[in-house]
Length: 253
Image (cartoon, rainbow, N blue to C red; front, side):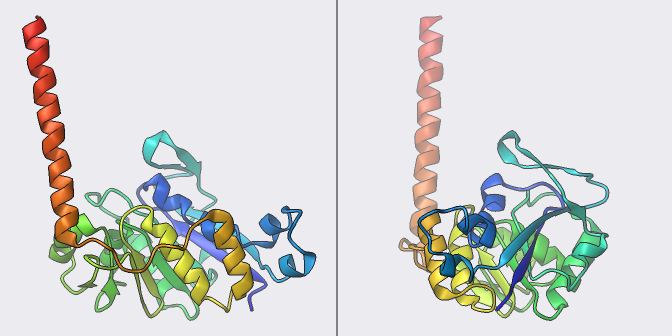
C-alpha cells in the first residue's frame, strides 16, 4: 500500500472550479487531514498515506490559473518540471476547461506520456474529456463526459466509445472519466474504493462519510432525453420570463 500518493491536477487552459475541487475528496484521505480529527483512533490514521497535490500549468500560462467564478489559484509546477515528469505521479486529474479553446501541444504530449507510464491513472472530469481527447489517450476507450455535450464530443473525437448518456463515471483501464461538474465527486469516490493500492477500505469509507459523497450510483436515474427535455423546458420558461419582463418595462415607460 502506498505511503505517499502523488496527485497532479493538470490545468492547461483554466477550468471549472467545482471540477477542480473534487480532488479534495482524495485529499481528505491523507494522514495530515485525518490526524487533525480528534475522535479518529490513532491506529486508523496510521493507515493513511501522505498525499501531495500539485497544480500543474503550462509554461506560457504562468503561475496564475484562472478558474470559474473569478477564482484564481497558484500553480505549484508547470509540466516541464522534473518533479511532475511522466511516471513521477500516481494520479493525474484533468478538470474541465472551456471546450472551445486550443490546448498546448507540449502539455498534450506530457499528458499522453503520463497515461503511458506504468502505474499512473488519469482521471478526466467533465469537459476534461476534451483535453484527454485532444491528447489521444481516450481513443478506443469507454468514456463519459457531460451528457449535454455527447454529440459535440463524438463529432470531435470519433474514436472515443462514449457512454456518457447513461454513466456518471466510467473506468477503462487506467483511464477514468466523469460526466458534468459534481459527477467528479462520484468518480473520486469510485476511484478511491477501487484503489486499495493507495487507501485501505475502512479509511476510504470514513473519508467519503466526512465529505458526504459516494452515495450516487454509476448510472443516471433519468434518461438523456428526459434530461435534455427538462433543460429545454427551463430555457423556454426563462425566455417567457424575460419576454414578460420586457413587456412590463415597455408598458411602464
